[in-house]
Length: 166
Image (cartoon, rainbow, N blue to C red; front, side):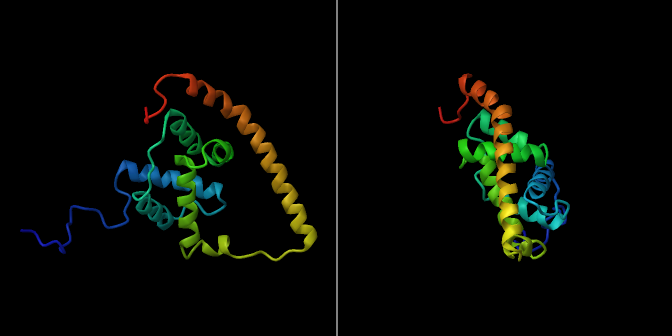
């Protein structure tokens, strides 16, 4: 009987990205981290995301959910469009769950938590200018997201067998 505490040399070390699925998740995390404003090339962050991903219900609810996730995986700009649209139409969908997981990893890791948990001192004028710029950027992104994604959403909603729930 094998010793359960013995190391199995056939398995990669814990945290190593050994399979195609793990490498895909690491690339996905890189896109999400970049979109969230964090370094996207830190291997330890990606490994933490892959480990935590196992606890996530990450199966898309339907074909549109899967399409939205695939769009977001295409880069930070696509992720911004998909996230903006998902905020209103799929707040509990797979994309939002994965983004929350990526943010949780970034907030909890020593190399990135300060960027998310530290207030930045600024004048009242700078704060207002920043808020206005954020609002304008959100408005432009929202309009672009609706123009790009709504036609696909409507098309997939009309096609048969779009839900795994029946």
